[in-house]
Length: 275
Image (tube, rainbow, N blue to C red):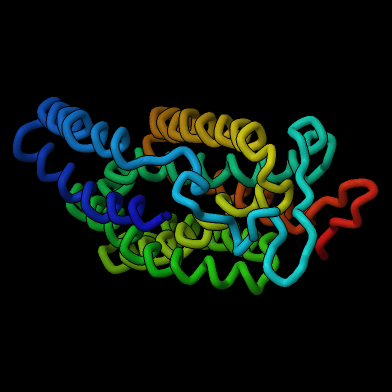
């Protein structure tokens, strides 16, 4: 499911850089807007389905009665109100918001950060494409990894990786260091996308997933919306990004701890806890 996102992340940064440098940013916006209207709106209207059941598909090998292959009982599902009473729900929201904040602020300011290191817009576009190209195979592998390794440990690894690539970005002064940054960012992004997609149904079931994910998506959008702002303020105050990148190192450290403190919750009377 994540392949399309990574494919777009590979193609669009160099395409956008070419459009902007060749025709200006206004024309680039117009081309992208028209492309969405004539390509993606019809594709969504004619090809998308509301749920797999419309195509006769069952989740995770379940039979028509909802019992999974192997004779296990139906999964335990939490309502939003029940989930909100758990520590894990709020810690996972924190873990959801931090990556969206970090990824958006770095993406929005990457051209400027590259300029500080005497690297141009082409290098910034290459880094974004490299990140997506690396993330693509990692995403494919991550799904299989998470069937064997508990998700909170892999999610904690995501935050450790974020700490590392921010530290590398602080030391980036050449094209080769920028490539190292892009490689690590891509690896971490590949794991991150799958973790965020899987953690809520893994912890709280799928019956009320819409209402639970709506809160998580709100946090994600808020992180994306406000993430670039501190970088812009820091640049205006300090004339660079060193100080704000040092501050940003705190967030993945907090995220890693939050993951490790969030084992799957036990719903009273079900014995549903997974260690």
